[in-house]
Length: 356
Image: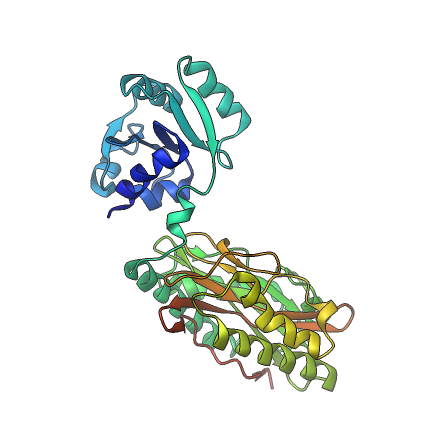
């Protein structure tokens, strides 16, 4: 069943006559359109892609399973005209995407239609990846792996974190990535205790751990990998932190499978870290869903009761962060399968010493 037909079949579950999809990511997922303007309007029998004259030709080439229509006025005016023509009385809209000002505009235009805020309608389909999607994500992961192999020869004492970040970005783009999946994290020394230590002007020094968290955005999909490197020799304390995270992460990767909850997946890493005495230094979830966005469902967290299913893709990324000392995070992208899981990222997890 196509994505459009699957969504049309869902409308009755939400008691909707129609659904307006305005999110850039969801619009691309549903229609295949990679441009930056337009909307998808669905009823149980109709599927329209609305855009302006700048993108009509592109839409005609890219859009699947929807009829392309060039808007005559503003996008809200065209949506209103089509809603009236299709006699939609209850129109669902993505409540996390529409601003209040946009909502007011639609409300003023749609006198005879009730606007119904909905969430996770498209995302509930996106959470299960097709083999075609997984193949794209495998390429994105391969680019990230290549970048990790490349950057090991670049990192040494005296190099700034921001320079490492830029080198990763340039390398991934040269390998085919559109961009990085998110702002690249390069956190060295005591900054490695910052889970989201985006690259700074700090100079990397001998004896430090350096955490690299980055990913390649390729053909509409993200990869997300974290590795922590040692610059020369490091202290026994930092070695103990690293080994704790490495074992916890490997245990979680081995244990992630269909049928367990996100909470149970989280515990695979968290319980081991707590057992080693570092529980208070692991404050974030063990992982999150990955796909067209770098953070999507499902979550591997202490609060997640979602049951993992084949086709879901999650990150597995436990960490330990001790203020004033340093930290470690190791992360891989994992596809849930019928018989367990398979990893998309394959960079070594054993501690690598660089700059020596």
